[in-house]
Picture 1: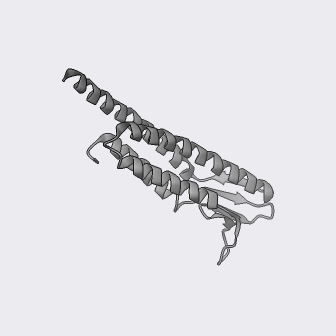
Picture 2: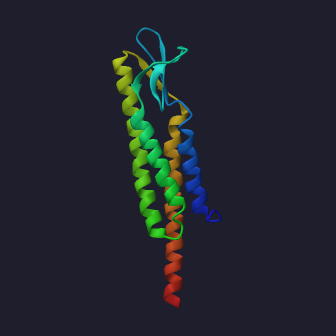
Length: 154
């Protein structure tokens, strides 16, 4: 299973998505000068001892969980290459949607707080995961073509 390069690509994409559970996506500087952090939990004031979540990040948590689960199922579907390709395409669409949801939440939150926002470098992780998943799809397709050509010879 993990000796195939596409499994390594998919595992790398899974690790990048799993890392998003632990890193912030953006910082928002409110109109009053307060610094807010936006991560998987939502938007909250950075300096607070017990931070009160201003905007919930539950949809992002759910989407991250679904992406990680689909990626895990894709890794272990190595015997069914066509299903693996379909799940990978679905996962790419979910990751692009995740990026859009993060952009929307950040800009909407900054608009409501009358502030400016800056994205963290961790925001490129879903995009790198999309590239890794695309590379996995290409290699899965090559494996499928090889298996079909061997079947024709027999």
